[in-house]
Image 1 (spheres, rainbow, N blue to C red):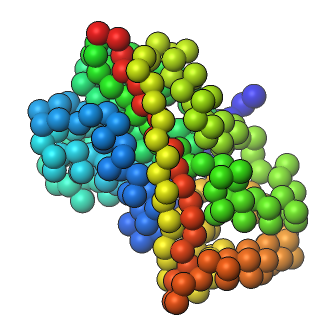
Image 2: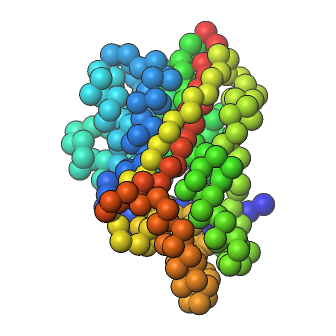
Length: 269
């Protein structure tokens, strides 16, 4: 299957969202970073690759704890945002499915909610294994699917009931790595040992008036589907999502459960 159009749409979409990431996507993704860094057993002096770094939040947290970090992302505007947030730090545009680093370059590789967006997660995992030093650790985080995420259940229930999903460009299964046992087996197939998974109970909190409008800025995959629908379908989906989201209103905010998992392993020494 050719996912090249999806790949370019993702790069463009995240470039457009770089400036607003901190007020939208980061409201949920940063909640996973402490568990991610614990899973790689971060230590002062470690050299870490933040793969798919976005504006650099995971790298920034690791640097605050004494690690040295390099961040890579394929959206140039995200790299610009990372440089703005962490001046003088090492961030570069690159493809985490084909990393531009020699073998055995890092003690740690971390990927926070990014394999959800690449065309071939297994290539990214194989690249993480390649650039790790023997004994190094890798961890990635991934959104739970609609079977365990009230947020994604609400979104996908409504969209699948009204939208023509075939109008969007072909894309890999977003939740392929969302089942813990399967995710561990993928790491083990790549050569990792000492694999483990941890559940993270993220809650997306936003004071947005319309949860639908907010979510169209939160990510890229759902907008890629919705922007190709008719105006009538978009209006219907917006109204139904906003109505269902009221069940998660707490005062002036929505508190939407959006859990993730952290999957980790070690390159054998």
